View 1 (cartoon, helix red, strand yellow):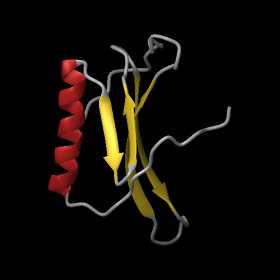
View 2 (cartoon, helix red, strand yellow):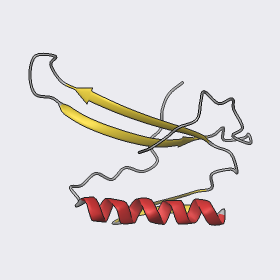
View 3 (cartoon, rainbow, N blue to C red):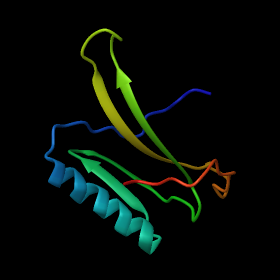
View 4 (cartoon, helix red, strand yellow):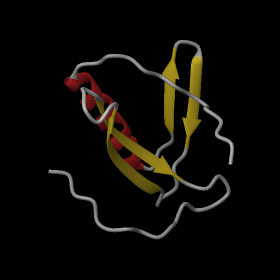
Length: 95
């Protein structure tokens, strides 16, 4: 299935700035509101359903014998024409 990027933003931020963005998204999810992403003239609004699939990934990219790059990815997924209710693979814990 081809992927269409609707919006992308990438910039260096402080941990506190990133936490503020994540809190804003969490607040919108709590209230059941749409999430609008804006950067310059680009903008996209998405409305996650009540039960989207939540994917969390921790990765290390690069050579196995040298320095690499770490990432933590948080992703919400749902079918465009569906309810977003898929099976679950286990309870996520963040400590």
